[in-house]
Length: 618
Image (cartoon, rainbow, N blue to C red; front, side, top):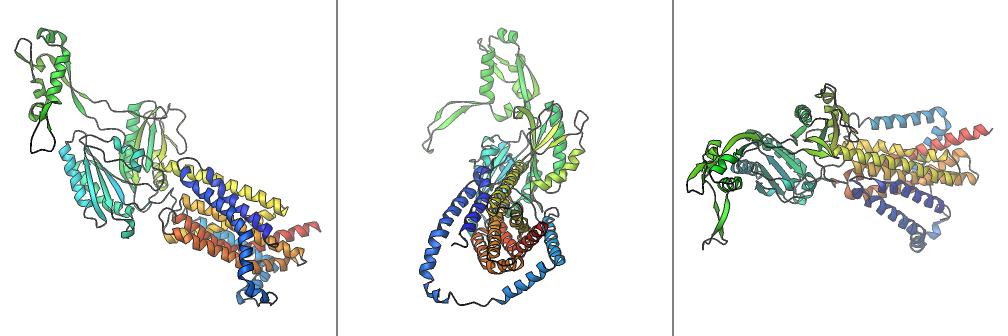
């Protein structure tokens, strides 16, 4: 306890310093991530109590039989002897140590290249494996309810062919019961004869080998073909793994004139259609729909003895209908409403409406066309606003080899830069904030990209805070400004294991992967602190610098290896969870790589730094 007690306290607070800043991540992802750093930090404090109270007591009780062996000198293993020989070669030659450090640098650069080469793809959160998803069907304006229901039923029959599907429900003309996803996307507001929702239920994820996302991707081409044949559009909405967004890809079009914004959005929509991997393209602009208007001539109505309100009321009854009573039928469980309304063929055309007969107080009848002028107009469309500014949304999903909005946006960026706004200027693309002014036409990227940016920005800030906190703690303990740099050097080396492991597993580098990287940094620093502290203990005992450096790596490797093994075993529990797989890969691969490399890197770096310091004092 006297030997490892103080460095254990320092190492524990270093781990807490690495984890706790993640609790201050903002945005929609904050509530999802906050329990991890708070719970882990609390566990570290409790583990310190266990290390000082429970472990020594347990050792005293359980290891009594080995007390007689305390004075027996154990022979070193062949691997330890090989390590001592290799380390002596490294630190004994400036050329060898320089080549080793250069090799570490090359390994690190090679690992980082996995990201730009797209061997490892970046995404906010991976796809979850839920037991349901939703199909959203939008038919052209004016489509009858029966036609919409028929297309939805066709899609339902195709969906039912999948062996993992247990059942489905079609909601035509009305919204399905909204779920977590529909809460943000406002699916519960969908209604009208041209709209339909299909709720698809799958067997439990424990009873199938295929992920729900793979099933949705398998269905998308056939469902799109059925929608295209009917002239409609279809979207597949999966339950999100994290906070729901309006859509995976969202382009927000701003400008000084709304009609011109629509023109620009049409161009952006075309770019979406032409980009490989971008699917389910739609926008917030409703298709123009005509309506029949009539303007009553007050003088003609007065001559006929009719009030304008009476004409409107009679026409409402004829076209929309009105309940006038109940039919009590013994064969029906409930009373049937009696609705007074014109026959369908009498209200389908402008001519039929114009021939609508109205009863006058004199007992005669007169046609609506004799009292009013009828003309065709266009229904006013809703105007969406974001931060009180008129906006047109162009939305889409991503599918294919690169199922991340980051890569789709990078593909479209060049094509969008070539577009010309109605005012003749190019459009400004904003990736971070809403444009300050609408004097010029601009595009702001939202959807999943916005959350991805917020999460990785906040995690990056948290990581910077982690490095500062650890540096301050280690400076306070070792009374040196250079030793903390040696101790923190293995942190980037975790990427040598993390990124290739993500590529090997075919996993996205996600927000949980970043959490694992940051948490692993604390664990690696813990090992480095114990290693460097042991070197200084040996030097205070009179051992030379070279011997102390070699001895620390040889003696302290076993507890470092056990720490790595504990992390690997603990993380393996969530390795195959779709959400926390990235966390497990980062902790396991990062810990293994840095433990093996830091056993050599930290002693070599410490030796070179201390040797230079000693030479400068001469």
